[in-house]
Image (cartoon, rainbow, N blue to C red):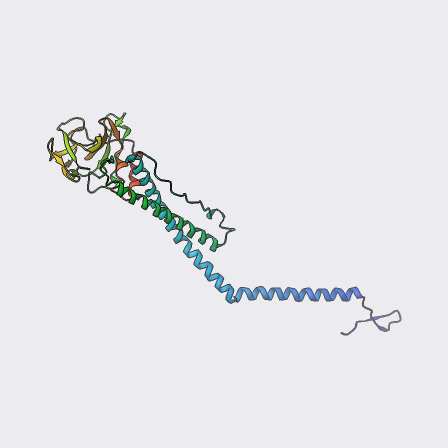
Length: 316
């Protein structure tokens, strides 16, 4: 390194002396500059080029990100099914066996979505998969309960209420008001409603919901209009009202699914529908929807329960 020269008092050139601190400072500046350039080169390299491990991790993260919504949707659908199965299970034991359903191990709540910013994708997916396995296990347990119930129902001593839909083509969208205090469509005041309004087109066949004997026939232009009442075993009765026509007579023995009449608007009926009642021991009006668990799938059953309870106005 060439030295620096200065003029002295006699105007002669002489070599300037450089202090140790100046030299050390120059060395440090050079080192810092070199280090900064190295870091900059590394960052630029990392932005443009990726190692095999980085590529693998990025692909893995993309796969997790794409798979997670599918797992969440599967979990939601399975949760809905399990909820419906649970409600059906509870209803079966409540209505038929007059007891609580066997306890199924609860699913531990896995709240992984509340901390997505701090939980790795792999852990989120793993937790979701574990929850799906727990839901499937619970569904299997409830299905076993149903199998046990099916075996018990073969026992003739068990009290079984009518459980079949009286309309062959019926969905939750046709569910009207069920039992309870409902607004009368004609007088616009709340009155006691003892059955379920099942909306259907005029002329649709009405079917007996269980085996029994026709105990009463009413033909009228008032009240419930044309009515058929059937006595079943163990003190149960079913009543079918607002019929357009009646195809059975008093004393006739009917089987489940026997056509007893047709949907109509006889009596005080706001629109074509079947007013269907389930009665126990001559006076206790039961909620008919709670007896349809054996006739519809779990999701349909839950929707029927919601529709019937939320409808505030009856059709008769």
